[in-house]
Length: 111
Image (tube, rainbow, N blue to C red; front, side, top):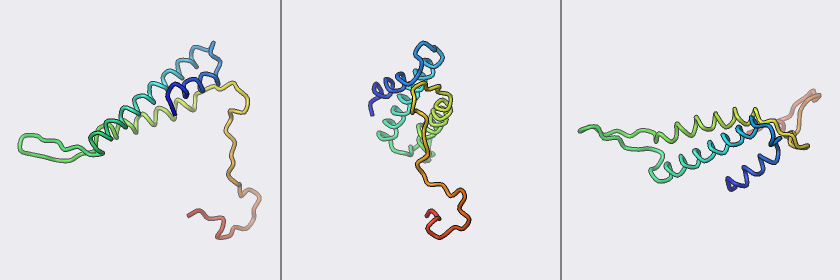
């Protein structure tokens, strides 16, 4: 996935005359870029870092891990506000349902 392709895909699914929707897409792309930067920092430094304070040394979670969680929360919240205009953009459930089924078997359970 390239960021430019993602942006073009999202832009094609909104009313581009709606400046609020355009701004949301721009914000979403910026968050994706920040998430990628966090991934790069984690890949470079590892998931944990060593902190030295005088003679003390301790290991803690890489700060980018916390930032990734915050970014993910923001992305999900922003995704929920997108007002897509193209037909067929509404996700459909492909998972089987158990509605109307009176008895369940072991095969109905998920491991």
